[in-house]
Image 1 (cartoon, rainbow, N blue to C red):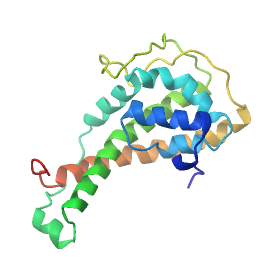
Image 2 (image 1 turned 120 degrees about the vertical axis):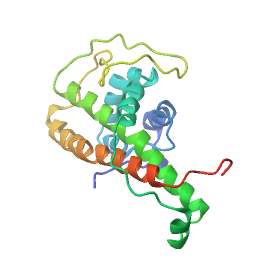
Image 3 (image 1 turned 60 degrees about the horizontal axis):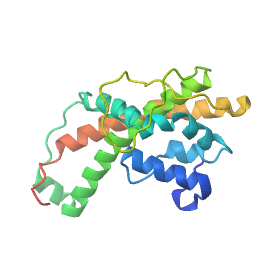
Length: 196
């Protein structure tokens, strides 16, 4: 497990960044990769300064979600309501399972894009895009899988790069798995009743 700064313990600039991540990514929590970066002095602030324009405009998320929606996950046998009830899954539990699947499908692709963009920064690549900002969420037109990086900012200490790259490598393995598992389970659940 990687060290993390829990949301409840975030203060100052970190708390502001956490709130923006939740809002820009339309998620109820900040992912563990950002919580891990927050434990390294100056890292989350640096990363967010560099990548915020791509997330504020929605370009990074849209690219990530578009790729995830195109995944053709193996099909599991459908799970009947009767089977769920035998397993002790009531309607509230069923909603919880669906929420976890939705979270995997929404958050994991964002982690992959964030990790890819950060890896590019750490390799010394510099932004080529204008870093345009938007005042509200409007899905942008289709873009490449990794959008242009925004304006240049100072780089944290190089001796910390290997530790951050190791953390990113963890997400390169687990995030795609979470998307596939989330899709498989979501697609196996019985259809939700209207108003449920």
